[in-house]
Length: 324
Image (cartoon, rainbow, N blue to C red; front, side, top):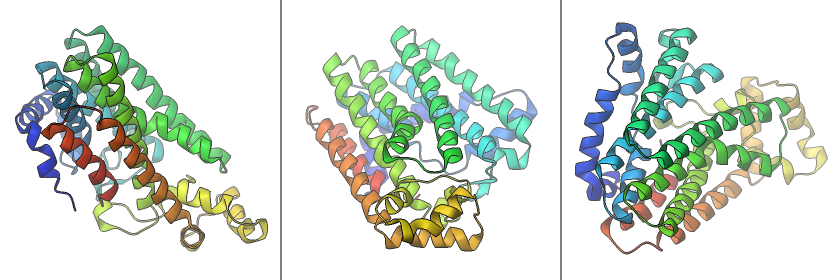
């Protein structure tokens, strides 16, 4: 297993600055906001997004103050989206700990999510870069569209692989694409390097989301949530989608009925997971995940050789090999 600490070494100093600014950004004089943020601040997140931004900045010309500021507002934006997602999905736990909406209630969680989002936009504006503000504003819109697309998919129950990847692009891949792009922008890189970094982040994001979706088909204590959670919420992700699309009508008929009727008893969830595994869903999803990983490494290899570029190559392997 790749050691994340080794990946971080080229940007150790910048990460230390990020952590200080990030803690400062989350401070509030309002007691309830402080208490609510405490429920997610120490939830075990690995800060992959700021790490990606800082590494691409370093690889594309060097970390600058705006690189660190950008890493902070990107992580704030991500935190806000997680808080709001937990409300939308009625998630009661995150990484094995009670979610903010479980500890408080949906009203507090939504408002604290808005507080964090506002701080992200304030910090984006402080960079003084109209380009960065435009990128982050567009991203916020795309992430909202991605969440709504995922809800549409769950309502429609049966989607195509194309629908699945449209949601992945908007919900996860674009966030990582923007992290890498802004890293290059803050480093003063030219348009070609910015484009390479953005594409690397997009491909990395696709492999990241497939890995997350694969977790749902196994009971892994490290993820902090039981297997089958996505299925119980009506989300048909790539492993199950592939199994359904590659199986004849008679074999898949009972499983289609479970999904259409939203009949997600523990027994049916277990049966759907077993069906996905037995009909090649896991193997297919892993193949697609590795394809995205390999393409990401190919794209970032176009940057000049450096310790930061080597860390970006290792980060791609870390993403697909992680168990959290």
